Image 1 (tube, helix red, strand yellow):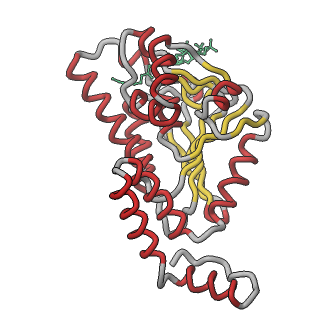
Image 2: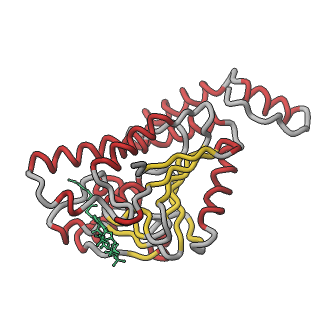
Image 3: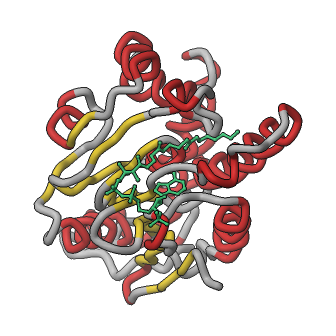
Length: 259
Ligand code: CO8
């Protein structure tokens, strides 16, 4: 059964869909394993921006599978957390840029999946939250770490300790998402954004992603060195020569070739 689908569109945009709508796309071990394999198939030679979304009208992902987790031992819980963490870290550090199109409930592991993407857009029907403490556990797929980094430790702790769900407007106001759209237009808007990203020089876009990600994990001096190296790596690419020559010659650049 395909719980994760990957569809490549023209123009370098691909759409990854978590497809288990009968359980609101809840993440069991099999879904996570298929997500892992799907991420391995994404080829930056053809994919310039990846959209991550959930199947159906109701949920992005309603969390890790509670029925499957109920009887886990301590060691099994830790192993499940590692399985999720490894895959979500793979997504976070995927070389191509990623946009989460959050089309409904993004709870627990679903909120954590969205936070592992570079940019989050959501439907006006979206609901975010980390309900774990109400289930007797902590977030286990990176939620404590990524939420604190994205919206600050105070707000993150309030949401984590209370297990309070928030709707789209509050998610926007705390900076958890970058934009809210009517549920009917969300995917079109996500594709528009992804298309715009995909139209820029891919090596440079990927270098921006790496610079932000790696730089945030370093002190400022080391972070600026990361940027210098990545900045330098863009020179002598065909896309850089094409774009800068076009500017100097007062014309539009040829389409970028990802080289
Ligand atoms: N796990 C398993 N099944 C689920 C989940 C889930 N997280 N969420 C929904 N489902 C299933 C329901 O059981 C139901 O199945 P069935 O039709 O067979 O009864 C089906 O999806 C539809 O759901 P509902 O009938 O509940 O739909 P409602 O519209 O009434 O409610 C909600 C929607 C509010 C989203 C509700 O389904 C809900 O509260 N879901 C659980 C949300 C949640 O608590 N998520 C967090 C889970 S914990 C987690 O993600 C931890 C991540 C880190 C793990 C670390 C591992 C160690």
